[in-house]
Image 1 (cartoon, helix red, strand yellow):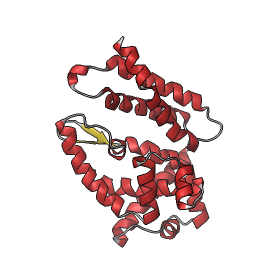
Image 2 (image 1 turned 60 degrees about the vertical axis):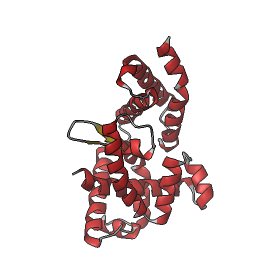
Image 3 (image 1 turned 135 degrees about the horizontal axis):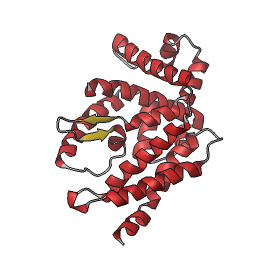
Length: 234
């Protein structure tokens, strides 16, 4: 059956997407639960797929698999309410500082705005890394209701329709400017992680930094990008 073929052919995608987030999860969580959720997302995609719509199954399925992973992560309630509030405050402070300074604030400046030490700031970036992953699922919609996520753009996947091509071009321009404005190490980390598909260990080996530090750089970069693209979306 076509359905079974689609599922089997795209299982490597499930493994890849789950593999990207598992290293960043708390050790007490079972990666198999995340894999199971992702597989269910793939199966649902195969059941709902309509070739007549002219959408590639890989593109269609990736959205469903990513959505299933996001839902599973949210169900874990990894971060406490207080930690989520800290994350929101972190986003607000970064946005406020960018507006006030006219540039990317340094880690020291953000830590000072949060009234915490630099070490505490880096610990906070470690704690909220999963939330920065969840923010990739935020979507931008055009006037016709077509949606595109930041993850879609970062992963450079196939276009779904002419409308998405236009949306993606516009968002790519805004994202490209935002990425170019990132500090050098953050820009390199984002490029290697999202465009080249490298994991934290591989990136760390290239730039001579620990996996933890790469995770912090990615968290900081995604908060900056989300702040800049929020202005674009609004």
